[in-house]
Amino acid sequence: MDDILFHNARLIDPVTLTDSLGAITVKDGKITAILEKGETRPAKQTIDCGGLCLAPGIVDMGVKVGEPGERHKESYRTAGRAAAAGGVTTIVTRPDTTAAIDTPETLEFVARRAQADAKVNVCHMAALTKGRDGREMTEIGFLLDAGAVAFTDGDHVVTDAKIYSRALTYAKSLGALVIGHVQEPTLSAGSSVTSGKFASLRGLPGVNPIAERMGLDRDISLIEMTGARYHVDQITTARALPALERAKRNGLDVTAGVGIHHLTLNEFDVADYRTFFKFKPPLRSEEDRIAVIQAVESGLIDVICSMHTPQDEESKRLPFEDAASGAVGLETLLPASLRLVHAGHITLPKLFRALSLNPARRLGLDCGRLIADAPADLVLFDPDAPFILDRSKLRSKSKNTPFDGARLQGTVAGTWVAGRRVDQE
Image (tube, rainbow, N blue to C red; front, side, top):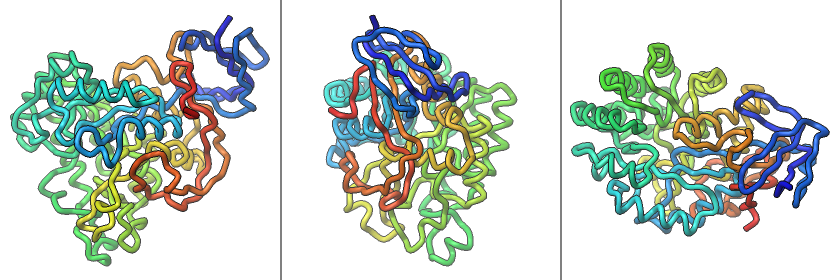
């Protein structure tokens, strides 16, 4: 007898790209069978999904947790609660903490904290260079042994191409994944918005979108030279897409992601200097937003993530140029992503290909799919349920979301990690 039977569910399968009625059985934390409509099996617990969508839990690449150093912004306990409420069953944390996660000892410390406090699965990235300062590479082999799933300096671009190429070569020899932030650093330094008429009218320092393509072109050249496994954390402009397409066509081991805020917001949302809409890279034009959405739909851009970046009120309640960048996104990732579905830009199975399947595959995880023997990491959600977001009710410690007061559709009815419900704990 199975432990759980999820029946009367609308199964969203990102592998076969199907959306059909059926059922799932779970035993010992793993999926045991996918049943067609009308099929059933005996189980200790039966959950009637009521025709709601049942999909693989979201794998969110690029989540910042404030431990160590900024626990007042986000802890593993609050990040885990926020993830469970948002249907995120695996969070992949960034190393841009204080101090940076650049030694096996620091990585082991945060791994213990995550295991003790978080309700969901937690994987950790480590820094590519010591202190994320781009001068000396970290002990990649030891960090891999300690559990690092990828290496990145976050939004600190390694400007020295010789140091970067050596790190990429070493990562290649160990099969490690390197994640890059593609901005030409001298062009983007000091900018807070995308350059153009709107930036000029607001008197804000801007960066030309070509800075992203220049950064990507440089990194692709180094990947061609070293053969390393490489993932771009965010592609946000149309000008970068041809270079990404050429790299993939030429057989380089390159994938790319994009943050949900760049898929659902544009440069005009900054409006009257609203700092909750300040991001790195900055919000782009509507033409760029549409081009990036189309790239996600076609599969050119592989991953959608939240780029969850908690900031306290003191960091955001400042003049726009001085305010910290970023927004929380663990709880809003799913309903914001569903805006793309409701607008007809993408289907639900393709959306979960980018939210769950592709990030799991890129990181070598066995989750993100609805197949027998996969972990029973699942999210049950109503894609059409409307609500108005109240940031004060977010589970994150920080409340810096651009969606405060926004009308959204899509509510999570339940989240399971290894067959255990975690959104009600």
